[in-house]
Image (cartoon, rainbow, N blue to C red):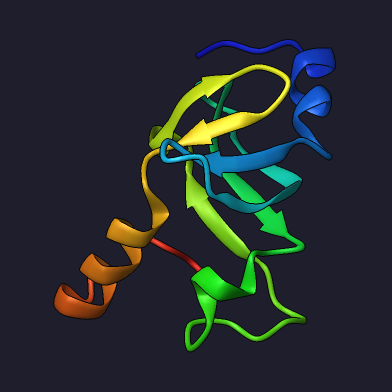
Length: 98
């Protein structure tokens, strides 16, 4: 995905929801691959603590891989975060970076 700087900065502040409609958090920053000129991750803060209890404390944020993003509009929709958190617990895959 190629983005201009205006499009990238427009992501900051958008709310992120799972594809099931559950609020996940708000985008605080983006991680870029400058060589390939693409977004590779989203740094979230103001997290839904019901989802992340036992994974992060209130003062922390998370980094999610951009490949989880399903659509970007007024809000950002991602694949179900609850399923991802369970898989991290079960197999230690570390896909959610805290």
